[in-house]
Structures are given as C-alpha cells and as structure tokens.
Length: 365
Image 1 (cartoon, rainbow, N blue to C red):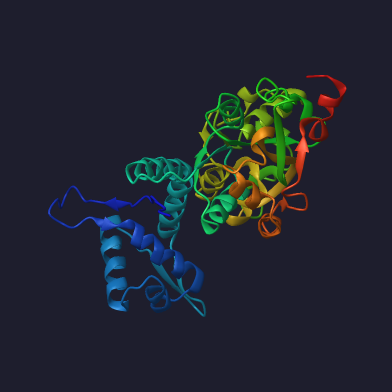
Image 2: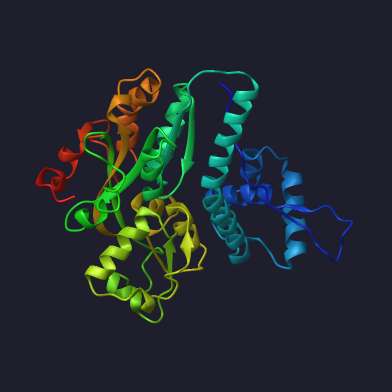
C-alpha cells in the first residue's frame, strides 16, 4: 500500500545577496529544537544527523542573516535559545500546525488518483472529520492495519452533510456534554436520520481555554475574554469548536464583538495553541491535548463527546470492515485513552442516535 506524506519546507533568501544559497530554516529549526531540549549543540547536531562543524555553520549563517545571536551560553545549563531563536521555533510550529490538515487531505487525494492509475481496485474508506488528535491517531492506526482510506479534514457540519449526500462513508463530529448538547445537536439533525444512521463513539474530551504557562493575564472564565488587554485566537467559521463557543457566549450574554481577535480563525486546535505559544495571542479555545503538547496551561470549560456517524447498512459491510474493525478494537481504544484530555473508556461503542442523544427519544428533533 502506498502512502504519500507532504511536509512544509521553509527557506529564507537574502535579497541583498541574491547569489547566496538560501537558508534552510527547516533544518535550522530542527537543530534549535534539540538544543532547546538538551542544552547541547553537539548532541543536537548528532540528533539531526549533522556534523558538529556543519551545525555551527548553519547557526553562524542564520545569525548573520538575522543580525543577532540564536544561542546563549548559560552557566551550568549549557546552550539556550535566545528570544529570536525561540520565535523561529514557534513560527515553524505554527506553520506546521496550520498546514498539516490541508497537506494531509491533499496527500490522501493524490493517493486516490495514483491508485486509480495503478488499477488498484481495493475499496478505499472515505472519512470526513472535524480535526482532532484521536482522529489523527485513527489515521495512523489505519495505516498500520493497511486499511485504505481517504481522510479529509473539515468542519463537523460539513462532514455530516457529506455523509448524508454520499460524499463520504464515515463522518466525524463532536457535541458538548450537558446544557449545550441540544443546541449543538440541532446543527446535525438536518443530516442524521435515526432510521438511516448510527454512531461509533470515539472519545470524551475536554474543551477549554489555552493560556501561556503561568497564566500571566489571570484568565479563568470566558468573561475574561472581553478584557481590553486580552488577545484571542479562534477556530475557523464552520468548525464544531467555533459553533460551540458561539453557543456558549450567546447563552452567557457575552458579545463576541467585545473580544479582540474573535474573527481570527485557525483550522486546528494545534494551530491555535501554536499561535498562543508564539506570542501572537493570549488565549484560545480548544481541546486539552493541544495545550499540553505546546507547553501551555489549560483552563477546563466543559466536556464533549466525539462520534463517527455511519450508515447502519454499511456497519457490517465488507467495504468498511477494516475501518470499523479498527475503530472498535481494544488496541485503538487504549491509544485514544492515552491522549491527554481524552477518555477512551467507551471508544468503539456502537450507538443508535436515540441512545446517544435524549432528544431523539423525546421526539424533539
């Protein structure tokens, strides 16, 4: 089975010296990341498969280009990154977090086209889903199990609509637990029908506020987002997280127009976290895993459940057997449960819409 991966590669060229080789920022950032973790240039050079001399050459070239030092010597702690170097690392993280879903989706599209040209007739599972760390874990697990799949990241409503229109086989979406559940479920009931669809439980996860370590602005509640000094970064319009936040703010009487940066949308939880980590915003809203992975503090607001919707008639079909088997396996459940902020105790449980959402039982669709 062929797999395509696409990664961003960053270079910087000095217009004042057009004949000079461009600086390979991707390699530089990889080196800086290891220096930040280990405090050792020699160990970091070895970790990225560079000679010590070549690593120093990259650092000197970069310092010359940027006009400032990237490495500072600290007593008893070896080498440390200067603020300039830290910004370079965060910029690279932000680029990767922002582009990875788009590049992953493009890679899946290219795989499908190549398979057609190679006359491979094995069924490919079409999966549209709101971006999340458990979804990424599923993608990796499907690769390991050699289950052919085409994963497209999109908003929750778009994913469920695609399922209803026959554009995908499995659709991932999420809804909050508690008072806001009914308001969110209404966004999906246009497309999900009790007689046609069922759900596979993926996880319960924590949604909340991302702040820099130490919470320097003392942000504890959504009301704090309206403070003049607080800069916010949001998810993109149409994402389930954006819909959820809109719903909560409306219920609490908070005008989004009073929140600086509310219309600045990022495509993933990781991109929101990277945006804050790089100092471009003070607060974001998303899943706990992203905050932990980017060294941020997390202020919990609520829990939500993530589901995969599927047509009942396809649940036991041969075409989706590999994907359904992976989703309902104990191995995958353990992987989800190991993610920070995720509860995988019910991962793989198959539910009717009525079992998942009380309003279906009560006839309040």
